[in-house]
Amino acid sequence: MPALPLDEAGKYVAGAYVVFVALILIYVAIIGAKIARIDRQISELAGVEDDE
Amino acid sequence: MYSKGLAPLAAAAAVTLTAAFAMVFFYAPNDADQGFVQKIFYVHVPMAIVALCGFVAGGVFAIRHLRSGDPSWDLRSYVAIHLSIILGVGVLATGSIWARASWGHWWVWDEPVLVSFLVVFLLYCVYYPLRFSIEDPGRQARYSSVFAIAAGAFVPLNFIAVRMAEQFTHPRVLSQTGGDLPGDMRLTFLVALLGMALLFVTLWKLELTAKHASMQLKRLRNERVRDRARVAA
Image 1 (cartoon, rainbow over the protein chains, first blue to last red):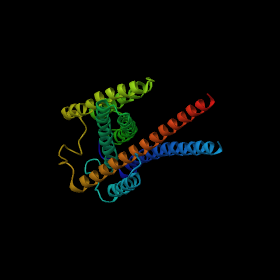
Image 2: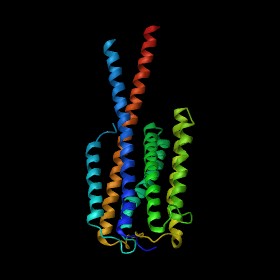
Image 3: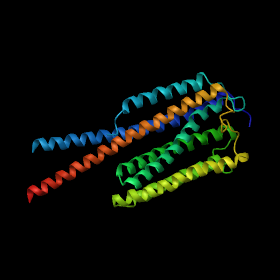
Image 4: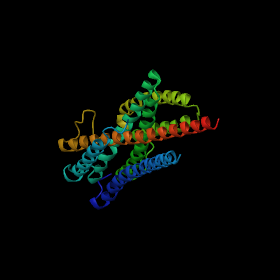
């Protein structure tokens, strides 16, 4: 197949890089949310200890 | 424990990947044969190499777990495989986009490189049901390690098989020696590969930190429950 013209190839290249960036951002967001939840639960646990 | 050096590592990964992507679009020339579409190579191939190395690393950590009995090696193995599967999703997606742009089809079943990666990916998808179908933590870790070692050994074998079927594969932009790639393209590729490897190690450490914190929290809660029971008794 001959090389695609730039205007048509551009959307495929952009698509590939967007997939990569989106994948990493979703992963980091999930892990970040998990760490924030653990942090909140530790604070709650420490609060209960202080009350007791 | 696992978070040591995470911030500088994350900064190094961000700087290297940004530099790599800048080089892809402003330094590396367009491929004479494929044109602008070949730019996908700089994200697709490093991601595939790092994912496959991650699978092998998962096997190596599993060997250390079976030798030492230390569950932290099993955790390292699990996180490496988990992360490699996520990168694998990216490899299959970007590979499909590249196939569509180059050959006019999203997927080609007679293409050994694509199909062999899919086989490896599906093999590792089995790891999750295997691991989480076992409740006893010791057995879970042992069985998962055995799987990780067997599957990790399959990865290089699969790579060799694809090389042996070279006459059927799509035109290579990177030969075994890297000789087919002009100097500026090769430099860009190597920077992208370094960035991807740094990103993998950063995310691996990040997930290990989260998992370790989660386990510590669980332990604290269990201790609290035990203390309460003791006081009540």
